Length: 242
Ligand code: SAH
Image (cartoon, rainbow, N blue to C red; front, side, top):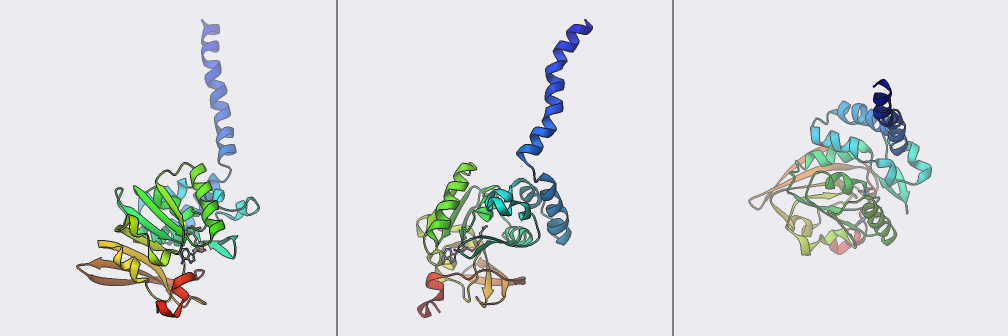
């Protein structure tokens, strides 16, 4: 009998003893991510449980170059090539929380970059549409998001200044590049009751994270603090756009 039990449980014991190692191997940065969520995100006032869960779930290190993976959970932005950056984790969480997203929402992002912010959004809402003006970054993000299995994200190479008419209107819009004015098409493509967040101000220095809510044809504005984003290029920088 004792022998029988041993045989029966042996595979189970092997599984149990292997499991923690297998996990650590799959996810070598789990501790870094827990620390980031606890201190840099929750510690700074982000309270929405869904946002905290998603920041813990999405593997930020998979959105940067191998050589930068060790820094992926540090409290600052990181380069993603072509002079662009992936935002500081806290800023990603803050902007996402401010949009007050619901599971059935359809969201537009301007500035795909690495695809990290899009992945965070896609864990919360039904559909994410994201536009990137730099072809190389758009291609890399498309490939990465596909490999990670995000079937609810559509990436487009183009100028996000004009939004994405084909899939408008959106419940929420997030702009992750700095502009000195709000692109009119984005306001048009926002649903009534929808929210739009963008770093608004000087595209050379600092901006104010600005949250707009569209209600009955009017825009309510809230300022959420100072940030420094890379500039929105293309039409946003042309004189005709001002
Ligand atoms: N959200 C990204 C980081 C954004 S960095 C992430 O999670 O990694 C800003 C990005 O906006 C850059 O990749 C830049 O190329 C892009 N960008 C700048 N101007 C743009 C425009 N007019 N339309 C679309 N993307 C733009």
